Each structure stands twice: as structure tokens, then as C-alpha cells.
Image (tube, rainbow, N blue to C red; front, side, top):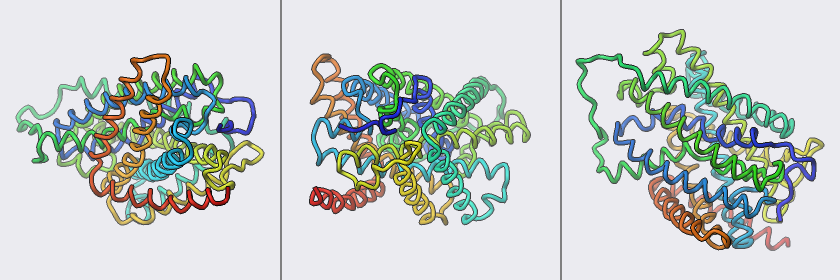
Length: 433
């Protein structure tokens, strides 16, 4: 069984903070740069939103139920897969999920940089400066988390309240706006030229990125007060809030900004608000967006330490990751994950922000979906009291498999290569034992 993340200390995460962790991890970079990634597909991207919304709700139900059935387990998807299928599958899920986290962190840091650059253009004047800014903010959040779960949780709660309030207001104003050029040519429904099936597969993979993080409350479960009640509630409520806010705000941006500008924008929300209220309001939004990306980044960096901690305590990751400092912080996991994320930014720094963001989210999504698929199978294996949950788990499994294919050949190839890289570590750990 996985130990509590803070080494037996009193649980420090309540319902509000756990819900903020879910909402904060879901509503962030995926929202703030996603309109640019979806711009080539026009209104046809609604197909992706519909599919990913249904899939996210199914997956949230799976994780909420697993959180009820196994409330004492920290480690999220890894813990449930390990409990249901043993060490081999447990390691596979842990390795994939860990990859998804440290490949998500650069995308979030890049989104922060895009909005910070709209405030201080010198930060993104060259690709090297943009990469440096992304790495710097990544390490700032690592410092927050090294200070302990209570500090990191406080940052998460405050930034989540700011972002949700601002985005709800923006979505209402943007969707209700009746301005614009009445003589402008109507926008094509599907400007990409792909078949609707192809558009649905691609956009559902991209939009699912905006909903990744729905499992976040299950990862530090050992540090959550009354996890059997708190984790399921935080998962379901947080997912519902994030879905409404994300779809509303993204739809407003795509309605306001011309597609040709949106496709290359590093700060689409700023462009949208400038059209509505002018440059001064755009700068305010850029500041809010940067703060909220910072909150999202903080939550995902927290996961960088908590997941390896749980896996190492089960003997499937090196013992180094199971060590904690006086604050109960898994310092080694945080530092190692931050280094990997920094390398990923550096390896691709010459790409445009939008291109690098799109590549990173597809890689992270592909790495997340296999753990999600296995967790749905885990629920089908351990569910006893609610037969209808078996149907929910089966649909979630089918959705995860569909979305995995939709991430595309490049992301799947990278994911397979990174997965294969974990095999020597697993064999070495087994031999040590």
C-alpha cells in the first residue's frame, strides 16, 4: 500500500483545496493557448469539445469511484492500477503518467511565457529568451513546492479563485458580444480540409488536454482529510466547473478573434479582450492569464513529486524518490522532474510557442491516456457494489482508446519510445528486490 505523501503527518488538504487542485490543474495552459491550436479547424472543433466533454465526465466518474473504493492510496492512476493488477502493470502506468506530468509542465510554462511576453515583449523577443523565461518560472514553482504541501496548496487555492472568476466574466461578455463587421464573409465551418471524422479525432485529442488533471485529487490522497468523501467530491465538482469554464472561455475567444490571427497568436485571450475593450484591458487580462498559468504550473509541479514518492514506496522507483525532507516534501522527485521538464523546453526552444505547445500537449495527452485506459479496466476488476459503474468504466475505456489513436503518429511514436526507456529501470528494480 502507498504511504501518505507527507510521511504520516496530519492530512493538510481539505475539500476546497482538493477541488482547487482539480480545477487549477485542468483550467490553465490548455485553456489559454488552446484556441490557437484549434483555429485551423474553425467551428468544426465543436465536435472535439463534445467528444472530450463526454469522455472527461466518464473518466471523472471512474476516478471518483476508485477514490471511494481505495481512499487510502496515494499516487492516483498508478495506485489504482497497482492495486488491481500488481507490480508490472503498476509500473507501466506509473511510468506513463510520470512522463505525462513532466511533459505537461513545459507546455504550461510556455503558456505562461506567451502571456508574460505580451506584457513585457523583451521576454519573448527571441526563442532563447522565451525558453529561458519558461524554465525560470518552472523552477519558481518547484521552490514553492519544496516549501511544503501547505504552501503549495495555498498558492493553488488563491490562483484558482482568481482564474475562475475572471474567466467566467470573460466568457459571459465574449459570448454575448454583438459587435464586429457585419459585412465580413462568413467563416467556413471546417477550413482545415480534413474529413469531419479526421477533425473529430484530432480536435478531441487537443481538447482533452484542457481536461487533463481531472484525476489530480487522487494523487495526494494520503494528505487529504477524509479521502473517501473528499476525493470523489473534489473530482466530480472540480471537473464540472472546469468543463463549463473552459468551453465557455475558448468559444468566446474563437468567436472574437479572426482565424488567421488566432492560428499564430501566443496570447489569444489578450487579443480577444483588446478587440472588446482596448489595449489597457488586454494588459490586465495578460496579467490575470499569467497568474492563472502560474497556478496551474504549481499544481502540476506538485504532482511531479507526489507520484514518484508513492511509486518508490512500493519499491518500483529508486529509493531516492521516497525520501522526504523536514517539511515532508519529496525534494528529489521535484528536482529530478524539474530537470527533465527543463531539458524538454531546451530541446525544442527554436520552435514557435504555438507549435511547441501543440507538440507538448499531444505528447502529454498520449502518455496520460494509457493510464486512464488501465484505470477504467481496474474499476471493472474491483467494482462490486454498483453494477452500473461497470458500464461507465467500459465506456471510459473505449473513449480512452479512441482518444489515444487521435493523438497522432508522432505523439504515439514519442510515447512508445519513452515507454520503452522505462523497461530497463523496471528490470533493475526487480533485480534489486
